[in-house]
Amino acid sequence: MRQLNLFILSVLSLQLSFSQIHEIGVFAGGSNVIGDVGATDFISPDTFAFGGIYKWNRSSRHSYRFSAIFTQFEGDDADSDDLRRQQRDFSFSTRAFELSAGMEFTFIDFNLHTGRPVATPYLYTGITAANFDNYFFDANGTFTSERSKSWAFGIPMVLGFKMRFIKQLILGLEVGARYTFSDSIDGSVPDNDALEDFRFGNINNNDWYVFSGITLTYTFGKNPCYCVN
Figure 1 (cartoon, rainbow, N blue to C red):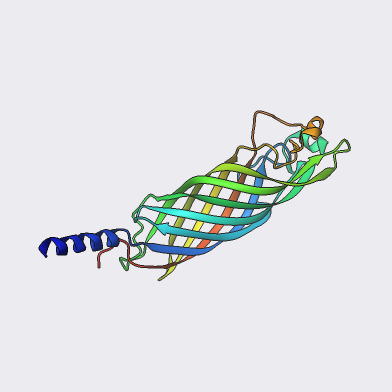
Figure 2: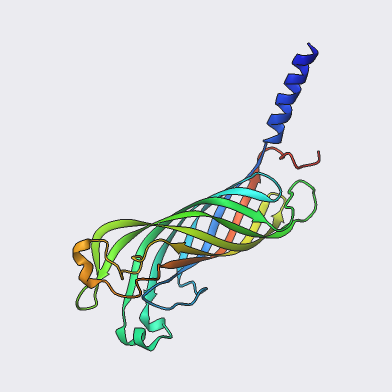
């Protein structure tokens, strides 16, 4: 009987050690693309971006994070500091939808159950997949639809700061660059091999895009194991 009680206690302890707190909320901000068309400023949001975000706080120092963000990727050579791009005068616009999953790390313990104000900088990385409409520039420089879509996989590099806004609301401010394994977001590399002649730009550099904005999440769920009851 004593062994059975010890076994039950160990199972309950294991369950408690994996009990978690959850966060669910929204992201709102802007996006910009760094590619072969338009400006190459790192933080220069020019279109609205919005979406949803979910976090599973594994401890007070790291969380598993998932998000889905909608935006419109745009670029205009007229906004570039490069005189050659200004003279070329290309521009593009394509709808995009990003899915992302990874891990968020905090610089300071972010324990939401102490009853005290909490705030910390954080880093996020993982993997992203952005779905976008395919376009190319024809012989007249017209941005032309290929009537297809592609996925651009990438690595997110996000730096942010978050704090408890009120009891169960967390407010965050973040800037996140995505290095992609694609060079076709801006239309410089057609998806259709038959349009290879319309390819242009630096073939050694893939496209980047950046999300800058705020997050607002609501916390719920059981106290995680790092809490003092």
